[in-house]
Image (cartoon, helix red, strand yellow):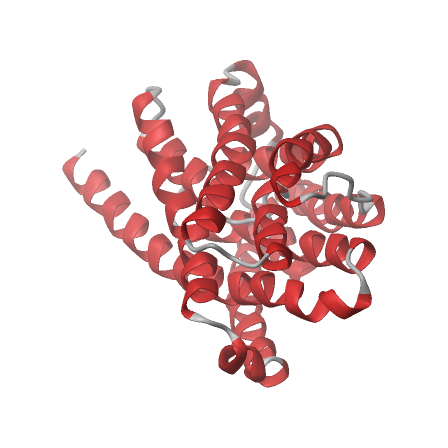
Length: 279
């Protein structure tokens, strides 16, 4: 479904869309700094405010330090954001994670006695493949046939809706016990990480002079993290006895970020329509 979704996103784009962003890289740079500047700091602050146990605090920090998730591209599309910028930001943060994650985990993980985590290079490579290959195919189809591209975009839009329903359905079917086990502090941390990321990402774009379309994109890209990468890190790093506890927070984050992203995208879409009507 992700492959079909990203094909649909690619069918809306041309190489000129990416070239335009590279010629004026301000938004891309601000998005990168927001991703690796805001989210780890927010995660660390929430862990301290709610006095989370060490294993859960570390898992929250891991979520904050991971790059942007692929579904941010979908929500940027729904929110009338800049899809080419969103894909560029996801790519840049995923590649940048190779350097940024060890540095950030050294800074923030030291407070909890753990600073070294094995990077999931396989997850990084697979994220890039699943995202970029179908986008390139979609762009090629658009170049050859606008009609075929329009069909691809519609199919991709439906696939995106199925992705959302699948993510929510899978969580509640497989992890309903998680909802019973989690404390208020864990719930609050999982929800607020994404919400505060959305808010700070938008404000960062606004105060640095980005366009409203770019602000919406930076907001969504900042708040939506690559949760599968977090889970891979936890499984590779934590003792077996701690894994269940440590996986609790990213699982909750994964389901609530989908819900919050839907609501924020609808709000942004409404604002974008009013901007269009006013302009």
